[in-house]
Each structure stands twice: as C-alpha cells, then as structure tokens.
Amino acid sequence: MSPVGRREAAGVAGAVCSALAQFALVVVVTRAFTAAEAGAFFTATALVLMVAGVAKLDAGNGLVYFVARARTYDYLGISGYVRAALVPCLVISAAAAAVLYPRLGPVVLVLPVMVAGDVLLAVTRGFGSMRPTVLLDGLLVPCCQLVLVAGTAFVNTALANTALAGPASAGTASAGPASAGTASAGTAFASTAFAGTAAWLPVAWGLPYVPLLVLAVVALRGRVPRTPYLPGTARDLWRHTAPRSVAGAVQAVFQRVDVVIVAVLAGPVQAAVYTAATRFKVVGQLANQGLAQAVQPRLVRAVADGDHDRADRLYQAATVWLVVLTWPVWLAYAALAPWVLRLFGPTYGSAVPIALVLSGTMMVATACGMVDVVLTAAGHTSTSLFNLLAAVACTVALDLALVPAHGAFGAVAGWSGGVLVKNLLPLWQLHRRYGLHPFGRHTLSALRVRHWAAA
View 1 (cartoon, helix red, strand yellow):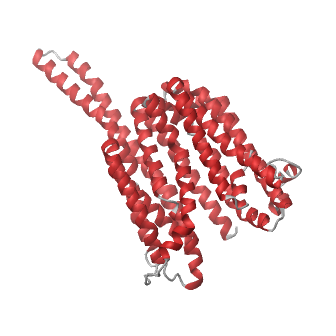
View 2 (cartoon, one colour):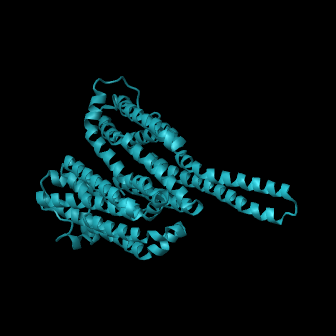
View 3 (cartoon, helix red, strand yellow):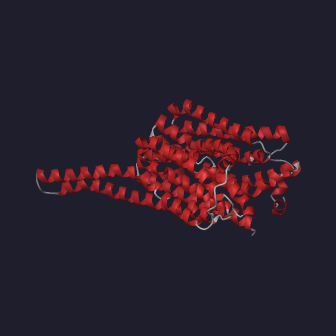
C-alpha cells in the first residue's frame, strides 16, 4: 500500500474506532441514567462541540497547507504560523467558556484545551504524520471518554441501589422510630448523591482532552524549529483560512444545532431520544469521508484539466460504491429499529419513526454522492458555503416550526430538510454547469474493481 493509501486507511480506521466508542458511550449513558439526565448530558456536549467547532476557525486546515508548503524552504517561519493560528482560536474559545460557564458548568473549561489540541494535531498532519491524529483523537479521547463515563455510570448505579436498599433495610429493622429515622436519613443522602452523579458526566467526557493536548505538544517537540518571526505570517495564514473559517463554523453549527434546539424547545428527554435514534448518522459520514479522501485529488485534477468525462466517471464510481457500502446499513436499521433502539432502554422505543426518517434521508443523500466535494473540487467554494447556509437556515426554520409540537420527530424532520437542501441544491448546480450526474453509463462498470482502480 502506498503512503497516501496508508494515511487514508489510518484515518478511516481511527474514525471507525471513534464511532464505535461514541455509540457505546450513548448506550452506557441511556442505560444508566434517566432520559432527562441523558438528554441534559447530550445537550451540554453537543453545545461544547459546536462552540469548539466555531472557535477552531478551521485554522488546522490552514496550518496543514502552510506547513506542507514550508518543507521546501526548511520550515522557515513555521513557528510563527503556529502562533498566528493558536492565539485567536484560544481567545475566542476562552471568551466562549467564560460566557457559557454559568449555564454549563466546569465542562466549558475544556474548550481552549480542545481547540489547542486540534490545531496542534493539524500541525503534525502538515508534517506528513497521521499517527498522532489516529492514536490521540481517534483512539485515546473516545476510549478514555467511554471508560470515564462508564465509571460515572457505575457509581450512579451503585448509589441508586443503595437508595433502593434503604427502605428495605429500614422495613426489616425491629428498632423503633430512631432507627427508622436513621434509615430515612441514609436513604435521603443516597438519593441526593445519586441525583448529583449525572452532573459529573460532562466533566468525565471532557477530561480526556487534557492528555490529548499534552501528547500533541510532545509529538511536535523537535519538529517545529524555532525561527525568527517573518512579517506578514499572520496575514498570509488568515487570508487563506478566513473563507474556510466561515464554512467550518457553519458546518459545526449544522452538525449539532438540532440537539440544542430540541433540548430548548422540547426538553432534555426528547433531546435524549433524538440523540440516541440519530447516532447512526456517523455511518454515512465515515463512508463518505473515506471515499472523499481517495477521490478528491483526482477530481480536482480532472476538473482543472477540463476533462469532464473523467470527472463524471470518478463521480459516478464513488457514488455507486457509496450506495453499495451504506444502503444495506440504512435498510437494516430501518427494518431492525424496534430492536436496535431497545439497546438504549425502554424509553427509546418511541424513536422508531425517527429511525425511519433518518434511514430514508441518508439513502437519498448517499444517492447524490460526494456532491459537495465535486462542487468544491470544481472551485466553487463560495457556492458551497451558500448551500451550507441554506441548509442550516432550512434546518433551524423547520425545527422552530415543528419541534414544539412534535418533539424529537420534528427535529429529525428539520434535519432531514437541511440534509436534502445540502445535497440536492449542489446536485442541480453540477448538472446545470457541467452536466455531471451521480448515476450514468459509468455506474455499472464502476462495480468492477479493475475499472474502479483504473479510474
């Protein structure tokens, strides 16, 4: 396997491990805590991730670009680029933490740590190493989150059992009112501790980002040479990154805003039901990510050379493989939803309609292929940003209209509308400008591995 292929495979492997750990974490939380407590936890973490996505300003991708280019002149001035990326990201994340602390508590203190760790891991990718990202972001953080959250859940269950055992022991005691009062006091203490355990869930979830930052700094030791600051470094970095910062912020909002809206308009119980039922969204994201990493460079070259036939062939090949890889998963999820959702507990059985809407929407989105990647490869980054803004606006409008009356189902309907806009709008734009289609004369031949490899 070539070095590029190894990096792609490593990235997808890390994403798969992360997705499995996240799914297990959701199961643990929903089984060990009430729906209201789980919903509060999911809302807090979604809000933290959304704010962190905005505060990153897509500086990591900008650093990858400049670090990779700096190799030709011995990385002269690269430490200045790293500082120019870190400072504004840290300022924004620290300000956001100060604003959110009264509502979310100690978990927001991890915001600057998350942002700094992400930026520094991007620097290691700029040096050509995927290992720190895979090991730290793909394995260390999600696995440690699962262990710490599971530990919190174990304490929660133990305290709950103590609270339940209190009345029983009080009933078997032969002593008088004094012993009964002691038993009642013990039960009240256990119940209070049990109720407070859920408050530590976000803290347990956020702690693993601290060792990630420390190890990211260690991974960069000796790689970033200390060189004099070059005038114009910050200007060059942010001139290149600013348009992508807006798109990255909008994408971060699009990924998480629905959970927050459900919690605000319908309550934490509906937020928990919605989060659990839509956890399988990551399956389509993983398949799309893996294929995009392999196809995007070839698409860029084909479009740049004006070779629309080759671009069409690559687009159709990627689309049919995306359908082959993901449609069985969505069909199985739709068919088995009543049983799969029981993993999260009896409260979540009402989420079957949400699972059906999710599956149908993802099948339509998959059939559109990597439409946004193709549009970006053609150089229409501003059009892609407009499409993303339209998708966010559609999601928020539908959520505000439907969530108060329909709860989690209204949220998935809003998300579905946003996803359809995000995929169908660029599909129409590609057809109108280049005549590209996700399915056509290259579709069936692409299923032959020899033809796909040639493409």
